[in-house]
Structure formats: structure tokens, C-alpha cells
Image 1 (cartoon, helix red, strand yellow):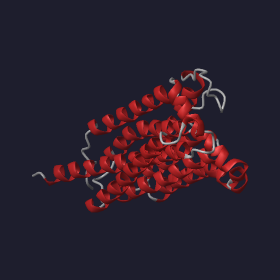
Image 2 (tube, helix red, strand yellow):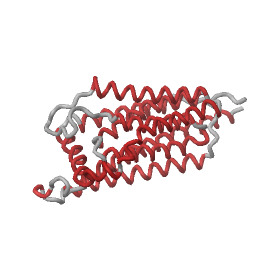
Image 3 (cartoon, helix red, strand yellow):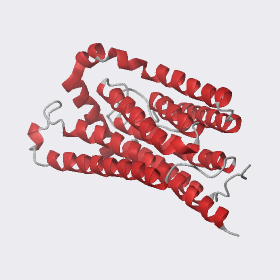
Image 4 (cartoon, helix red, strand yellow):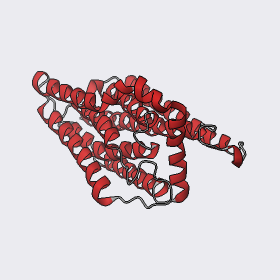
Length: 290
């Protein structure tokens, strides 16, 4: 039997620190400043003006996505542990998900504070989003539990699910866009070192390099495209005269929020694929040495 992969912790710790820094930046800009709160709230108010009660009725079935996330993650962990005998990876995945959701609760309820700057559409602090954390941590748990061969695909598919859930929360006016982005950053900060722990217990990843690189590139292209959309949406706001920037008449704020959710999610997917690709290359190099 091959020995576990000689994976270095450095890149994973750096990724975790980068995600934590992203979380802090989102909080400082979109919660602690007047401009950030105003921008974030306008996206939510535009969502209400554009979709209103229609989304709460026609898309009510999507409100069950957080509960479905739990079922999805539980099924994946049971399959990995009982069928594939991946006990350690399943335990790491479960611990990672529980840690992310516990951290979200503690941060929202006891640590982070939202100053009243006149932009409290939801009332009180709503960052990070508990629902977005649940969806993203479930996707991360599946990513950690599956075999190394399918991990890049799981990262992309899980991100797609989490991004869809995040956009639905904005459309249904559950959360501000920054709440969702912060939740993604928090889950990524915890999942990165968890990935290193999982890789340490496994043999070298068996996914062909071209497949790992393919999912990384697809994720990166979507993230960059969404970032461009967000930037252009905010730039188009400047074209509209201030007196014409009434809620519901300038949907660019909503577009910027939805694009930011998409960009942050797929950036995490690209990073996850990159980390397992680097680990696979190092494992292959180490195993090839005489």
C-alpha cells in the first residue's frame, strides 16, 4: 500500500489566511462604512423592487435549499464512510462543516457588530449568512469526503450549488450580497486546512492532471467574468443622474451583488482545484525520487 501523500501545509495555510483576510475586508467595507452599507442595501432593495412577492411565491420551493444541503452532505458522508471506508476523510469533512457553522453563529451573534448608519433594511447584523454557510459548508464537506479523483469536479459542482443558493437568498431578500460573500470566505478559510489534513491521510490523488487543470480554469474564467460584470454594473450606475437613481430603476446594484456572489464562489473553487493540483504534483515528484 502506498504511503500518504507528502503534502506541505504552506499553500493551504496561505489560502486560509487569504480567505480570512477577504472575510475581514468584506466586513470592514460593507458593514463598518456608510458607502459599503448603502451599496449593499441598494442591491437588496432593488431585488425587492424587481422580484417582490413574486419570488417569495414562485421561488418558495428554493427556500428549502439549506435543509437540502444538510441532507446532501449527510448522504455524501455516509456513503464515503460506510461504502468507501473513508472514515478519516469523512470525519475531517464533518468537523470542517460543524466548525464553519459554529463560527458563523458565534461571529454573527457575539463578535461582529453592525453600526446604525441608516441602512438597516434587515435590522441588526446579518453577516455572515447562516444559510449561505450551511450551503457552502455542505458543498465543502462533499468535496472533502469524495475520493481524490473526483475532488476537482466536486469543488466545481459544489460551488455551483452554493452560488445558486446565495443568489436565491438575494433574490428572495433573505440576505445582503456581502453576507453571502463573507460566508463563502469563512467556509474557505476553514476548508483549506481541512483539505491539507485530508490529503495527508491519502495516497497521491489519481485525477489526470488535465482534468484538475480544466476545472481550475473553468472556475477561474467564471470568477473573472463575474468580477468584470460587477465592475461594469457599478460603473453604469454613474451614467444615471442622481435624481434618476430611485430603487427599482437602476438594477445595476442587484447585478453587482449577484455577480460578486458568483465571483467569490468560483474564486474559491479555482483555489481548491489549484491546491489539489499542487499537492498532486508534489506527491508525484516525491514518489518518483529514487
